[in-house]
Length: 130
Image (cartoon, rainbow, N blue to C red; front, side, top):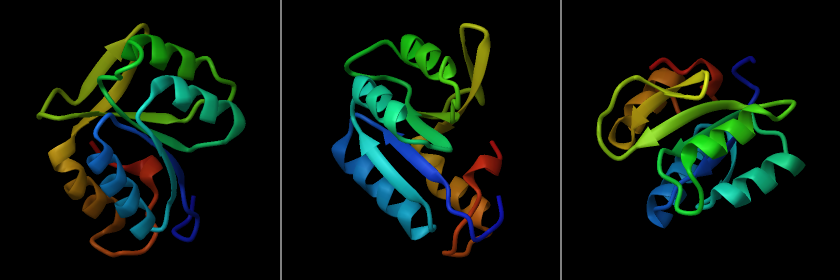
């Protein structure tokens, strides 16, 4: 993906304010984003839309995160998944046979800066370092 190509990102977070702020920041970086609080709604969106990346809070109010991730990984064109946590955590978390990178919500701004080299233009979230 080149610098002019934007990623399509689905943000799944129970906190309305944090979810909206994250979606706004992604748009400022040149990405298109959709957002929801619900794992069930996210699965519906994934059936009718293509996303490159999911940013998912590691606690979903309406379903167990492990079940959600299993259903996502079964999709034909499964997107890359990043788990978000409210507090600093391990770098990877395993559900079933898959491991997922984890980022603390408070470190997302650093992650965005790392992704775009400190610029406000598009960045490739598929290559975010963790």
